[in-house]
Length: 133
Image 1 (cartoon, rainbow, N blue to C red):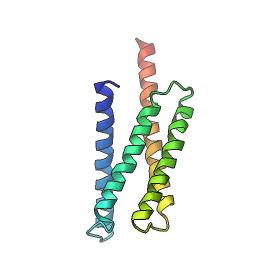
Image 2: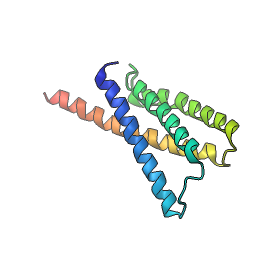
Image 3: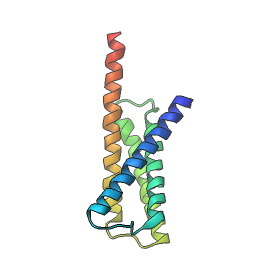
């Protein structure tokens, strides 16, 4: 993997982590909660889950599989299973919320779909640009 790809992975990870952390904080504050009830573990868990998703997504963009939707599915299924495993291990550390698996599925899937949409648009743009030249 070249430097540009590593920079892309680190940038995507950092931006998404920052945005999700800020959004989480704003939502807590809007609901009158002034401290994260889960504390630092919650931040570390978010970082690990995001790392799993970003690495899986970046790896899937390198797969020589057509069509693009199949490539996304090949990355999504194992990464979602790894995330569920991570959540299960978190349950050994502390009691999970009753909706923990549903919440992580919604959040992880939503972010993954968002990344897929961005990547698809960029792929179409690059393809059109190559054909135009």
